[in-house]
Amino acid sequence: MLPALAESGGMTDSECRRPSGSGIQAFTFTPAQGVPPAVAPFSHATAAGQTLYVTGQMPTDTTGAVVGSDVATQTDQVLKNLLRVTELCGGGIDDVVSVRAFLTDWSDYAAFNAAYAPWFPDRLPSRTCVGSTGLAVGALVEIDWVCWRAAGWA
Image (cartoon, rainbow, N blue to C red; front, side, top):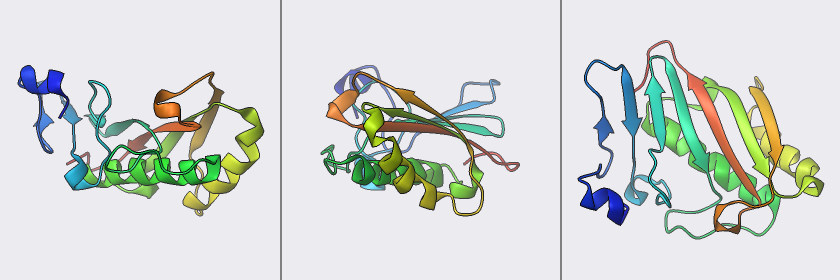
């Protein structure tokens, strides 16, 4: 947990904040659960009704180290991180309906697409790809996604 969150009585492990009557749930996980450590004050995902918003993930492992120096390897790690958060919330890859990707170099676009496409063999979600002048931890790619489940979230 981030020191600032610990000092403020923030969430630990996989606690879930459920504001009374709001219908909104915030999920925060730990490296022990297979999720990279948070580098800022945010929840890994927020559910509002049947929709789950998964925070942008970086190409880092559970120690916080960047995985790979090329966009294909980093894209694969980011998608693994997104899927892990989604699974901890009770969902899976088939629940993804929208993806937003950030790339620091448009010359990586083809390699990004080649790494991305196999993750969605049956149905491609809608997607926006945005150019960025820089990303946290020196990453080449960051991705967030939105999921939907009729049954809601864990």
